Image 1 (tube, one colour):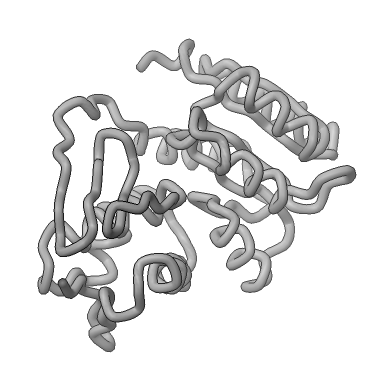
Image 2 (cartoon, helix red, strand yellow; image 1 turned 120 degrees about the horizontal axis):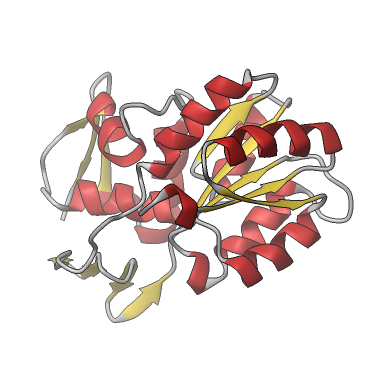
Length: 227
């Protein structure tokens, strides 16, 4: 996909942030869309279907967490990458962001060139060819990698993109212990820096939705999927 075909939606109530970030991304050749609050961001996301959304957390009318939750409910935006860009760096804020379905978390202040590099790394996650992705069956779980859907005993379960990719990775080789660094590399990308708790948060959510017995923690090493 060419840069000129990639839409990036910036959602922030600070005009200076929109202007500076938007300018630098436009200079890279991306299509940049802007919204000044969460409610406006959701409407624009529905209409424009961007490949990447950069969300602030604290905004009027609808904050970034709620906006992320609303966007993640839209099937047509299931592959859209969402990252938070905010000055709030506390653990609880990051956890809330990941729980809402975000893929990453960028903390202000950040230099424009560094932000552009971060955006490029995030966009590398876009699938270039999903047509050959198979359907995987593990026990009562059926994973449709092409449609980003799973079902358990015939009932469909909706998962955010990163939870789906984490489940798909672990279930690809039941019983194998995946090291934390390998999980981060395969699911989040080697060029993307995420918090130490990222994997733990996603595993916790999967345990709630899939069942706690399916995921085993190997202390000091990583995780494995058990049929």
